View 1 (cartoon, rainbow, N blue to C red):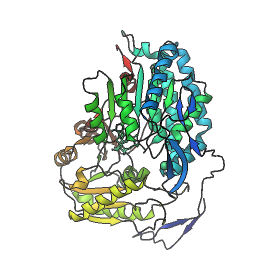
View 2 (view 1 turned 135 degrees about the vertical axis):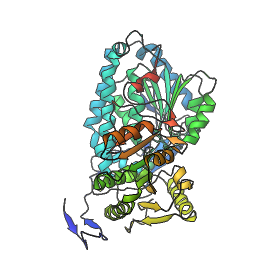
View 3 (view 1 turned 180 degrees about the vertical axis):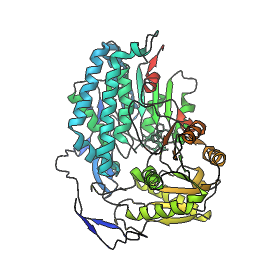
View 4 (view 1 turned 90 degrees about the horizontal axis):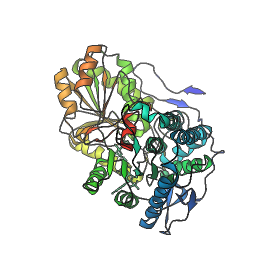
Length: 492
Ligand code: NAP
Ligand code: MG
C-alpha cells in the first residue's frame, strides 16, 4: 500500500493521512438485474407481481431489482418449508444434515471475495470489514453448527433433542450475510427448515446465499429466502404454519413481534437494540483503550447493535483520553466502501442518515459539545463524519437512546460504584467493555454490568462458539454457541 504523508505533525496531530486509492475489484462479481424469490429450491416470480430496487448507499445508484413477497408468497414459502420438514429434512439422519451444512460453508469460503464485494456495495460497509469479518465469520458459523448436527444427543446428556419445525427468521441490514448465518446454520443443524427475510436495503448477499444453497444441493424447501419490507416480515411472523420466530432488529419492532406472538404457542428469540458502555479506568493502557473505543463505535459506521456508543472515562485521565480520541478521529479514512483504506463507509440508507442527523441536533440542543473529524465526504451517497460528544449528562437523549451511527457520547466518573450505576441506567443491556490493568476490577465490573457480553481490554470480538444476546430491552434468548441451538430444539 502506497502511503503519502500530507501535512502531518506527529505530535498534536491535526492533518490527515492521504492514501493512494486501493479499490477492490468488482470484475468477478456477477449480479443479475432482477432477483426473484427463492422458494422450494428455485427462484420464482413473486405472486405479488412487485419488485423494488436495492441501491448502493455510497453512490445512490440502483444495483438490482428485488422481489417483494406478499402474503401469498409468504404462504408459499412456509408451505414449501413444511413439506421439506415433514418429507425430508426432519427425518434425515443428523450426520447427513451435517454434510450439507459443511458444503454450504465450503462454497461460502470459495466465493468469499464475491460475497464481500456485494456486501460492501449493497450495504455501504468498508470492504476490509466485509472481507475480514462478515464473510469469514458467516462461513465459520456454518462450519461450527455443521459440527453440532450429529452430536446433539451427546451434547445434552439424558435428553432426546428434537427439532421444532418451520422457523421464520427476520434479519436487519447491518450484518446481512452474518445475521443470515447466525439464523440459518443452527436451525438446520437442529433439523428445522427455514423461511428467511433479509432487510429491504441489503437483500443481495442473502440471495447469493440462496444460489450457494442451490449449488450445495440442499433438498428443495429446506431454506427459502423471501425478500420484502416490514409487511413481509409481519406476514411471516403471523403465519400459522411457523413454529418458531427468530428476529434480529430494533427494539420497537421486537416489541410488536412479541405482542403478536403472545398466546400463539410459537417460540421466539429476539435480538434487539443496544447502547453499550465502554469504561476506561485510570490504570488502563490508554493508547490501547483509545484504539478499542474507536473500533467499538466507528467500526461499520456504528451500525452495530453492540457498538460502544457510550464512553465513561475516569476523571483523572478524561482530558488525555478525549485529546487522543480527537487526534485519532482525524486519521480515520471516510469514503468509498470498496477502497481497502476506508475505515468508515457509507451510512446504510437515507432514512438512517436522517435519523443520525436528528440525534446530532438533539445532542447540540441539549448542550452537548460536538466534535467532528475535519475530513471531507463524497458529494453523492449517505455519509456521516465520525462524531464525539462531551458535556453530556446521564439524562441526555443521545446517552439514553440508540442512534446506530458513528456517534460517541463521553462522560467522566470518579468511582467504580458510580460508573456501574450509570452504565446500567438505560433500558438496554446488550454489551459493554472495561479497560483496566487490574484483573480483580475486570471481574467486579463484568459481574455487575447488566449486559449479555462484556469485553475486557478489547472490543467487538466474535466467535461462533460464544453465545450472544441481551438483557432488558436488548432481547430474549441467545444466539451462537451451544446456547444458540437451544431455541431450535425441544424436549431438552
Ligand atoms: P428493524 O427496522 O427492526 O428491521 C429488522 C427487520 O425486521 C428487517 O428485515 C425489517 O424489514 C423487518 N421488519 C420491519 N417491521 C417489521 C414488522 N412489523 N414485523 C416483522 N418484521 C419487520 O431494524 P433495522 O433498522 O433493520 O436494524 C437495526 C436494529 O437492529 C438496531 O436496533 C440494532 O441494535 C438491532 N440489531 C440487533 C442485533 C442483536 O444481535 N441484538 C444485531 C444486529 C442489529 P425492512 O428492512 O424491510 O424494514
Ligand atoms: Mg442496498
